[in-house]
Length: 178
Image (cartoon, rainbow, N blue to C red; front, side, top):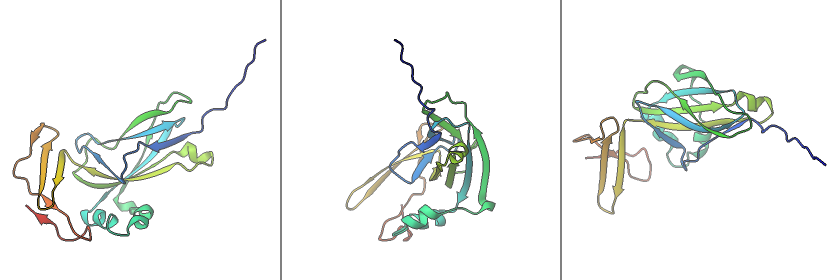
């Protein structure tokens, strides 16, 4: 006796790799964002640059709803479709190239899986990006702070760079510079 059964194809979908934050850091010289995708042929990508003031206002006190509902204007956005070559019914980590390079700064990224939307599963993910080729390590004590900056292109310390540390009840309070 042979028993055969067939399971349906996995539902198309995508998810962000968990980073525990609304902000993801990418290298300016190699900007790639990673997702996990299943049964998607392509992903619609929208990338918009943000001013520092806009970024800081979206992460101030009581700004969760504002951040969740934020959509950049079309004039500041670039749109394209990233084509994927995924094996069927297998969840894969996929790197989405965002450009050859990005100017250092703040960005808003929206990813949509069109095939998932056709199946009634609206698969749309939004996240904020910081693009830089400088990696920072930050240590803070009760009276002082240390910032160690490394250039990711040369693997050398960044020497005598201006640093601003934002501290206070409002993230938009004036920085303390050193």
